[in-house]
Amino acid sequence: MTNSFSKKTIFIIPAVILGLLFFSPALASEDCNIKIEENLNKLLKIKDNYYIYGDEKVNSEYEARKNLLSSIISCSKEEVSDLKKNLEDIKKLNEENEKIREYFISNLDKFREYFQSQEKTFEEIKKNKEKIKILAKEIFEWRQSTYNPLIKNAVNFSFVFKQDSIISTTENRLNKINNSLKIILSVRNKEISDLLKSAQEKIETAQNLNQEAFEIINKDIEPIKIELRGETATTTSSLELSKNTKGSTDNKIIKKNINEPEINPQTKVEKVIVPPQDLIKKSLDNIRDAYKDFFELSTVVKNLLGF
Image (tube, rainbow, N blue to C red; front, side, top):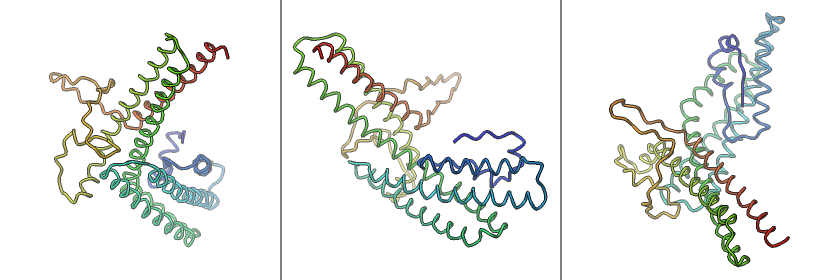
């Protein structure tokens, strides 16, 4: 969600509350995000309203802060449930990635229990201003140290494998279209050939981008892999970072990221790491454009056949 704060507003909000305000669920529903944003805006309006003061302002801020904290707890529970379902929907993982998924799911179950417990505590203390402040601080610090890092990795893990499935489905559709065209058309058509080639190139680009995203994510979750293997250090080579969902070794060469700058030893320019979310989005964009080629193919074929 988008928050537009004035500098003045930012500095008058206590650090703990400010951290909660920037809560933005990765997978929670749009209704949930709207609810948080509405509660956030109410709190900010009260803080910036100089026509109310004293006990009235203190009580108004307390009610607004309490409603915001309540929505954050409930939306966190929803986020955990949605992410768990997304992870459970991933198919055909190899043994190592299956263990990583189970690791994420196990922790998500613990997170849900945590928020359920905090929700119960909230109901018990919601009339106590000081205890509400303490609870908000505890939740914020726990989210920062424990919840956010794992959620980030779990979301990226889920997205990259979901995209893997989408790419596979798109590639299968292209193959079916190609085979159907060979049957119904007796002559070769340049426009159709160009569209087929365009769709194929976009699918390949999507595959490469998704693979690049996976390589970055795999490095991020390396500590989890070490923990699951019961090791204290790792010497995993780049060749072992392959995402073969069937579990076999995949030694194919991945095309270099076109966005990756060359490193000049003289200037010592550091390598720019593109966020995996950006790579996955670009991958999705290419799949979307491949489907546009499919629709255009359908129109061209209909015109050729006189439909």
